[in-house]
Amino acid sequence: MAVERIEGRRAVFIDKDGTLIHDVPYNVDPKNVRLTMGAGRALWRMKNAGYQLIVISNQSGVARGLFEEKHLLPVNRRIQTLLAPYGVKIDAFYYCPHGPDDDCECRKPMPGMILRAARDHGFDPQISWMIGDILNDVEAGNRAGCRTIHIDNGNETEWIRSAYRQPLYTVRDLTEAADIICHEAGTSVSACAVRPDAVFHC
Image 1 (cartoon, rainbow, N blue to C red):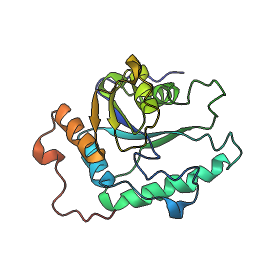
Image 2: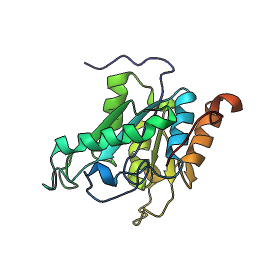
Image 3: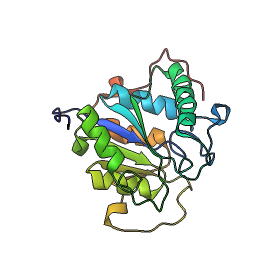
Image 4: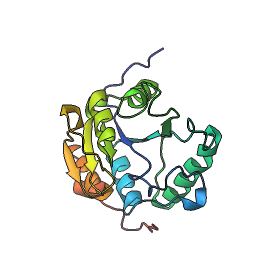
């Protein structure tokens, strides 16, 4: 049963590998998980601006037989641990375990994971955002009806263009993405600024 959309309930959907954490291909070792520069500060600001934080991730290593789904849980726990010093946590993790040839509706660039999260939590995609480091993330967000931000950090290599693969904004990192989202949310500078008493660790 679909969850009734709650007016004004909004989220930032965030790609994991290459956007939230450094991209280590097919990694399920928590020791190799590191936040990207500025990620903790940026997520705290987005949360303080009134957004839930949802990770949306393709995990084809499951379909390829490189690891089991259960091995993703320690990675997710490690992300929460790394974010804890910033006073923020991820509200939910969604992943697609299928391979690129499985023709599923959840693997990005398809919007299935975003739409499912929106149903599960009552989010309105039209006032939500999708952030990612490749254009498949952008396409998934656009297909779901979100506003989209592409982090141009060198991870996109194919640059296949289409109307769905055009981001609303292109930025260098999550810090710049948070600047845009806080501004667009109409959040005051003081409310969206970094806490003066916060201690941050990257």
